[in-house]
Length: 504
Ligand SMILES: Nc1ncnc2c1ncn2[C@@H]1O[C@H](COP(=O)(O)OP(=O)(O)OP(=O)(O)O)[C@@H](O)[C@H]1O
Ligand SMILES: [Mg+2]
Image 1 (cartoon, rainbow, N blue to C red):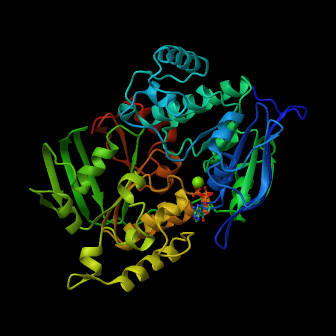
Image 2: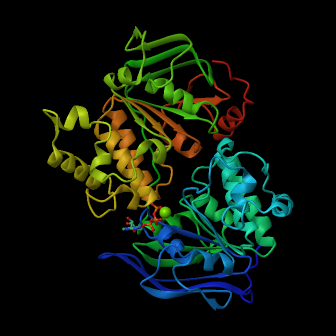
Image 3: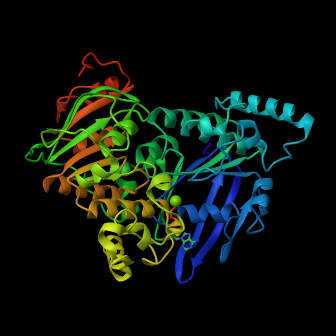
């Protein structure tokens, strides 16, 4: 499969890379090497400098010091085209495809002119061959805008392979994938390394790092703090390297449950069929399921963005006639959005503006004027409490690392102390330390009386935190199971729609 023998050819070497942004050092004398057919995982806390390092390798950023060598040749800094020519392909943390073009045109875009007539056929043949050889099933004629996240990612990988990449860099490739899609991705990578491709992937998920990487390089605050062979390490050791000490596994005692805040009885809506559930105060209700099975619709329904087409919807024991985003807001529903780039933030706004995005009218306007000192103080409080690594409240949010951006949004929602909280994939993209912190905050919200709906694909997260668990599959909800009533394997069966007890 992957070759680890010390004789294997070195395909990439980063030597003493240092990158500063102003006075901040994002990469501090980092060295790293990669061999032919090897899979190296790059780990580290949010803001540790992982994406920055890969952007230097790919030529998006120019290092202040140090050098990059690819297949024995020095790589001229700052030229993505030179990296591509040298055989380096990159799949970014946030995809870069054009929605309105076909798969084939996206792959050809930037490599060759789309108008060369003979080219289209040859290109199509090459894409079909690559997708067969590497197990990357996609339809070359499909419009990218119509594809799922997993399919888009396959297109990104195909695009790199089409350009004859021999080194593939993947920045958090599984952050947005379902567990099944992640499995398929790693199967593809195994085939690819068997064909001589070398891979660096960035991940916060230690179980997949343990399963897929030959070697792990751990960064902390811009420095390499450890390089370990996966076969000779453990999840606990990796976590300790990342954050500097051992983290206790979250073990959450059940809380005293409060009154029913929301009750849904046989509620239907587009994507949901006859959903029956209660959200109680002082209770974390976990919703397990493979993403795309109605979770988004349920979150929209409770958040007021999707109108029910039938059934009974009660708030605090009274039937609700008109449920809207406004009504939900008034009822104290808070929502941690799933897609933090589309619906969570405005990239060119500052952290302060983003922190006040949903509340500026109600909290920060005085006689029609914004109270800027208050907006800034609010953001600074969130930055401090949620350990958002940044230069300050006036920085534009797009300059933050992925995980730090997320911490700001989480803080923004949690600071409103919502009585009903929809937490949709709340720890996606966060490092182990930040995950423990967010989980503690969810439990604290519950203990303060909030009704929390936790939507997650991660069964450890669901079973570790939830007082009550529902499983969703194809828009249908299982009955409520008490904490500990189901083993994870049984939840897995229900997620696949195969459980016996699937009727509400
Ligand atoms: N263009 C920039 N200007 C200023 N600061 C930047 C810029 N790009 C990155 N940074 C800072 O450099 C640090 C490292 O960011 P980077 O994106 O490399 O982190 P990361 O390890 O990929 O984190 P995550 O796991 O959250 O994605 C962060 O503090 C970030 O705010
Ligand atoms: Mg990153």
